[in-house]
Structure formats: C-alpha cells, structure tokens
Amino acid sequence: MQQYRNYIDGRWYESAKRFDDLNPIDGSHVAQVHEADRGMVDRAVRAGRAALDGPWGRTSPSERAALLYRIADEIDRRRDDFLAAEIADTGKPVSMASTIDIPRGAANFRAFADQIKTAPLETFQTDLPGGAQALNYAVRKPLGVVGIISPWNLPLLLLTWKVAPALACGNAVVVKPSEETPGTATLLAEVMESVGMPAGAFNLVHGFGPDSAGEFITTHPDIDAITFTGESRTGAAIMRAAADGVKPISFELGGKNAAIIFADCDFDKMIDGMMRAIFLNAGQVCLCSERVYVERPLYQRFCEALVQRVGELKLGLPQDATTTMGPLISAEHRDKVLSYFALAREEGAQVLAGGGVPHFGDRRDQGFWVEPTVIAGLPDGARCVTEEIFGPVCHVAPFDSEREVIARANDTRYGLAATIWTSNLNRAHRVGQAMRVGLSWINSWFLRDLRTPFGGAGLSGIGREGGLHSLNFYSELTNVCIRIDHDADA
Ligand code: NAD
Ligand code: 6OD
Figure: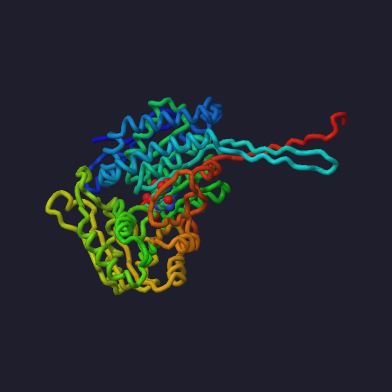
C-alpha cells in the first residue's frame, strides 16, 4: 500500500499513527497517511524559522521567481502522476482534473513568480514646513512562518494558490492538506525536494483538524500567520485559535451563491454555463450556484432545459473521457448532502430531477455517489435555500423584477460569488456591482484571471487573495521615512 509521509526540514518522516486515504469512486484504499503529531508540527515550525534565518531568508525576489518556475515545470513534467493522485483521492473526471486542477497547480507558481518580479511598492515625497522634505518608501519583507490549511475539493489548485505567493514573498510554510486528499500535496513535497527548495522553507504535515495537525498549526505560538480555505464554521474555530497571538489571517470560506438569469440572455450559452456553475466537480466548488433565480417569462423553459441536461450527465469512472460527474468526497459528506435532499422534501420542495442515490450494479455502488438534483418551490427562508449544501444540487425560483431579485440574492449571510446572465449591458454592470459578494461573473462563471482580487464577504471569508492582494497579505510592509533637509549648508 502506498504511504504518504510528512516532509519536514527537507526530510521524510513516518508516524506510528496512520489513517486510510479512500477512493470515493468505490471506497477502495488509495494509501496510508502518516498523521503528524504535535512534535512533528513543532519541528516543522522550527525548520521554517531556521530556513528564514539561513540562505532561504537571503534569496532575492528574482531568485525565488526562478525557483517557482522550476516548481511549475516539474509539476508539468510529472503531470500524469499528479493527475493519477488527484483522481484517486477525489474521483473527479479526468476531463476536469487535466484542464483545471493540475494545470492551475502549475499556473499558480508561474503567476506569482511573475507578480513578485514586478510588484510595485509605494513611494511618497512629503513636503515639510520650512522647505525640508521626507522621502517615504515601502519595503516588502516576509511575514515569517505561515501555516497553510486547505480543503479537499480542488486539492492541488487551492493549496498552491497559497503556497506559491507565500514562497514568492520569501516566507517559510507549514502546509496541511485535507485528510481526504493528501496525495497531490505529497507529490508537491517531492517536487520541492527535486527542484532544490532549501530545507525548511516548505514543510508538509498530514492530519485532521481538532486535536491533530490542523489545530497544532493554528495554536502554535511561533506560526506568524494563518491562511485557510474551508468551511465557515472551521474558519470561526481557527479565528479563535489565532486570536491570542493576534496573528494575520486570510480566510476563503463557504458560499450559498446566487445565479440570476434574465429573460434577455443568450439561452444556449446560459444553459451551458449554468450546467457548469451547478454541477462542476459534483457541485463541490465553493463558487457553485445553489440558488438559481430565473425571470418569470423564462422560468418554465429554463426548468425543462435544465432537467433535460441533468439527464444527460454521465456519472462514470474518472478515466473515461466522456464522464461528466463524479462522486462526492466521502461517505460522511454524501450523508450530509442526502440529509439535505430529505430536508428539501420535508420543507415541501418539488424535486424536478434526482434526489437520491444512483445504482450502478458495479463497484461504484460501494462509493459515495448521489444523483444530480434540481429542487423548486421552497420559500427563500427554507434551510435548503439558505445553508451551503456543497453537492450537485440547486434550488430554482422565479422572479419578476431586477430590484426584487437583487434583494433576494443578497439576502444571505454568505457573500462569495454570483453569476448573472443578460444581454442588456447596463443591467449587467448594474446588477454585477449590486451583488454583495467578492466575485460577480456576467455571462460566465469561474472565469479566472489570477491577478484579480479573490475572496468573500460575510461568512464567505476575510481578506482578498490574488495578484498583489496575495503579495500584500504574505508580506510585512515596512515604511522607511528619510528626512531630507532643504539647505545644503545647514
Ligand atoms: P473543512 O473546513 O472541513 O476543512 C478544511 C481544512 O481545515 C482541512 O484541512 C481540515 O483538516 C482543516 N480543519 C478542520 N477543522 C480544523 C480546526 N479546528 N483547526 C484547524 N484546521 C482544521 O472544509 P472542507 O470540508 O475540507 O471543504 C469544503 C468547504 O470549503 C466548503 O464550505 C467550501 O465552500 C469551502 N471552500 C471555500 C473556498 C473559497 O475559496 N472560498 C474554496 C474551496 C472550499
Ligand atoms: O480559482 C481560484 O483561485 C480559487 N481560489 C478557486 C476556489 C474555488 C472554490 O472551491
């Protein structure tokens, strides 16, 4: 059986405590994972500090950028290994992993390598009384040892989204991937070793959250900052842990995202876009639309087309290029999603499609699958319309006016993303800007430029990452102020 070990201070560490990594396609074993104990996390943090005090701490931005490019090239070279590991851990279709997860893993390193080489810093010339001046300029320094905790839905993409800018800024990192998806993070540690990342700059520890590696990182007194992607509830627990040390935090959390479809949209493009927005990665993308509002004249046509397209989704093995939907990540998560299907019925929903567990008559029956599901007819306050489900499911509702739908879409404690479909240019800008979210997509969804701000409002997160926003989070900026006297003879 494959073993996933911890990578600390440039060496691989086994642990007596191990847990199983399962393949959600059929519940089979992928690997045994070595759970880091408190001592290992402590060693990782000390290794990070030593790296900052050693040659890693003296690297220039261009040297770090060159190293980040080598990491990206090595991920590309080992693309098939990364694909196999990501698919085994998540069950996601190869059509997705090969076009989104793995290429974005490499692209994150190139994007932040380019950013750090050209990142501007502020300079201000200040006029003082009597004609003297002051010159102020900012200097970018690393924060220190950064704890990075990531989820299972886009394992490599979301881990490297934080590792790349943190390293670009010269930090040392202690990384904990989700216990559900330790594979590509372990390969990333191998890549770090093979490209010559200085020992201690990148450390990987495996484990869970409470009373395990996650908590050992967030409560460690020598961790200088925490960056986290995951559930809003977990974010709240981490915030409490970080409070004592008053540590910088960056949080990318859950969502209950709205899609708004106006009757004047390009129908065919909208349906294609909405199938992605609802069902990509079996709905396990934080940006997925779980609340779909359709202008009344289009409502019936939209529901019929959506139900027809749901019937065409192919729930298959990941290596089959025609597969369009995979399983959920775990038995526990499947049970959570199924409990919402049951709740929807109790709340009085009409189930337009799905609502159950598919039966395959093969090994997939031991896996963690649910049917792609469309529900309708619930009031806006119903739990299925207000709580994040994180599965292949949406609730569809009609609306009558722009003002009404903006109010309904914004009536949520989350605030991550929205997708709006219209061919009216003024309305597109108006509604896009009116959304209380971090990301408003018009006639598109999950269309990314890595230089743009990414994050959420309300329960969906704290701060923004992406481009300069990432660099500013992962840096300690020092303003240097020099007085320049006016009189040369003074
Ligand atoms: P999760 O919060 O259960 O776990 C995320 C990570 O946190 C895992 O590595 C886990 O081991 C760790 N963890 C759990 N409890 C912890 C604790 N008390 N202390 C320290 N670490 C702890 O989330 P998940 O189920 O892995 O991911 C799904 C969630 O993530 C959804 O809510 C989704 O919306 C959200 N998400 C948000 C974004 C975003 O960019 N906003 C992106 C992806 C996923
Ligand atoms: O594209 C990204 O940079 C990003 N952070 C995506 C998050 C997806 C959530 O599941």
